[in-house]
Length: 211
Ligand code: DC
Image (cartoon, rainbow, N blue to C red; front, side, top):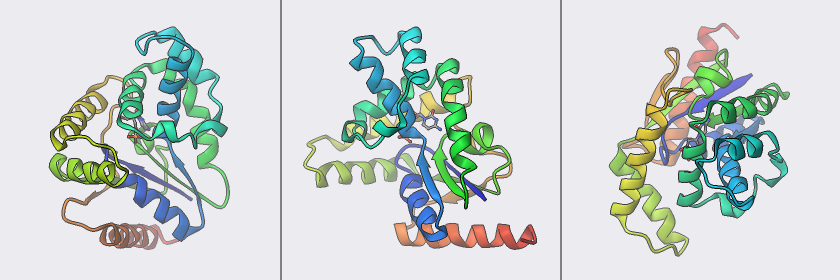
């Protein structure tokens, strides 16, 4: 069984994916980390992010064992990821790893921007998680403050808006809900309520499919 979770930055999709994977006993892949790692590796190799050749080489040579690098967690890494993610050859180079992961038994949860549309278009369950930009910025800001990172709320909100526009506006595999995705708006939901709602959606989907 494959569960595809897409949505914008700080919508809560990452937390939801992890919780669902744990609940179902499935593997979980945060596909944003792949793009973040490509951005990191381009910079480490001494190239600019707009160097397409370097980005494609980094994507083709990516070592998934390096995805737990704490350096991939910050805003800068997210921006760099969003930048290199626009390059079709980078996306193509990361596709096989994501698809292989999705097929691992007993099942997998993948979260990203194009899981339900491009990576796993035949996923059993597709959820598109949204929340207002303001609420997403407030959540992300609170996370930064909790980690001792001093950043203004306005900066976080501006970054989220730029990232949304770039991720949704690119020509190749833009962030968009698959036509058959279930929408989950977490603007007014706690993490627990979002999890319960997602489990409810999955149960309904499975019972409709007659599984
Ligand atoms: O989910 P995240 O914030 O870690 O993702 C970082 C960036 O990577 C995001 O702004 C766009 C890109 N990305 C993508 O294009 N496709 C995915 N499936 C996942 C992430």
